[in-house]
Image (cartoon, rainbow, N blue to C red; front, side, top):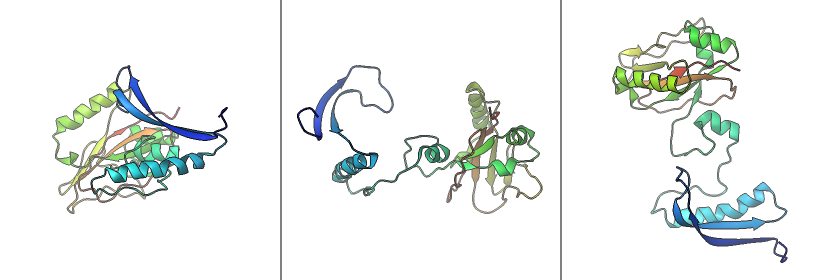
Length: 216
C-alpha cells in the first residue's frame, strides 16, 4: 500500500511446519494471497469468486461447478441447518427443528427441556434403520461421553416406529407415520437455539437420536 498499489495479489510458496489439522494442507503448498485497501466484503467476494470458479471448472473433470456469485449462508442459518459454519453442500442431510413434536409430549426429558426454553433438533441418518440395537446403544454412550444426558432415536419403517421416542404423542400433534416404503431415522437433541430449519426431503432411510440439554 505504501508503494501506491491499493490492491495486489501474490502466489506464495509456503511450508507449514506444525501439527496437521483436518481443514489445513500439511507440508509444502502454494497459497494465493491478495491484499486490498478500502474495500467491502462484497468487493472481496467479487474478486475471489471468479478465480475459485475458474480453478474448479478447469479441474472439475466434467463435474458441475456452482457459478458465481456463490450462495451466501448466514452463520446462524448454517449452524442450524448443517451444524457447521463451513458446510459441504453436497451433503443432502439437513438438521430439522422438532421442538413442537415434543412440546407437552409424554417424553418428559424433552418436554421438560422444551418448557424451559430449549429446542429439539432432528438429524436424519440415511441407512441407519438397518443397524442393530447395539449401534444405537453405542451412540447413546458416545453422547453421554460428550456431556449429554443420553440419546433418543426413532426408526420409521414398514413395521412402524421403533425406538425410545417412537410413541411420542400429544394433543394436536401427529404420531410418526407408519407404513409406506420409507425407512427413516431421525436424530434429535435439545439446545437453547431458536433458529428453525426445514426438514430434509427424499431420504429413504433415516434414524433418529435425541439428547436433552437445559437452556442455560
